[in-house]
Amino acid sequence: MTDELISIIIPLYNAENYVDKILPCILGQTYTALEILLVNDGSTDGTLSKCRQYQRQDARIRVLSQENGGVSAARNRGLAEAKGEYISFVDADDYLKPDFIEVLYRAATAEGCDVVCADYVETLGSYDLTPLNGTFPAPRAERTIESHIDVLRDYCKNTDQYGAIACAKLWARPLAQKERFDKLRYGEDTLYTQSTLRHAKRIKLLGYQGYYYIRWDLSATKRTPLNDYGRLTDYVTLKKEMVRICAGVQDETLLHTFQEQYASAIVTVARATIEMPPAESREIQRKILQELKEGRLFPLLPFPKRVELFLYRYCNPFYRAAMKRHLAKLTTPSPVRRKRIGDFSLQAEKVMV
Image (cartoon, rainbow, N blue to C red; front, side, top):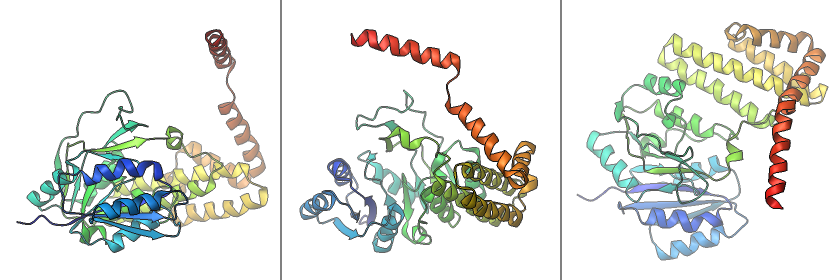
């Protein structure tokens, strides 16, 4: 029996430094019936040139080039072009074990699964695959999921992130092509994954740790700053869409949980407006209050956040001044912390001398 074609979609933007790492990793897979779609998303460095060099060396590679539209647009281009029976998304700066595709494919065909999820591992920013927290976590327990409500419950528990990322999976192509990635700056992976998994009839979670998510810039994983309003509004959009997705499973407890998360996200955006000019802040205030009203979310908030929104609406100048003082305390070191910083600096100077 001939192995089925599998499409691997790799979005690339100014990824010249990663091409020579990820492509040998893909080309060296033990499963060889591959269509490798390299989507150059308007790179301004040598990414496209390197991709074409590899294309000349291996007929399995197809290079697609487009104007810069972001990772979602690049993945959507790959989805539209993919011809394989299965699809796998891979980020250019990550790493796969040589048998990654084969292990997932054998699991998919053995049990008739729409999606197979590897247990991915986070590592520090290098290809020596140093564990992010010092040691690799124990592999997850393998199980099969046949209900979307179980996927949503796992996502709420936040104990397993398979429902939040599109990578580290093998998707049956008809399923993967049912949805497209939204052009969000935050949460595009989660929204696509959750939207698509709701159509799946059988999902296999493997304990196999074959996908390495490399944290090259740990600062990028920190919380979104309050003045990054664009990402914060995308965060609200994600939470709003999760309420919509959850509404289809008819579980009131779960729906209530997602509504609470949505309401809390709106409060976070309210806090972001304190750094904005009053006129701009008032327009956003109107939108925030409209969101709360339409979603009937205000009663779902804990009492302190309800008080906060009351002040935000009816005593906005006082709210802005109070929040600025609160944030200043969070960013200004206490006397004890200042002493520790001073002691550390003095020790560093002695070492340098």
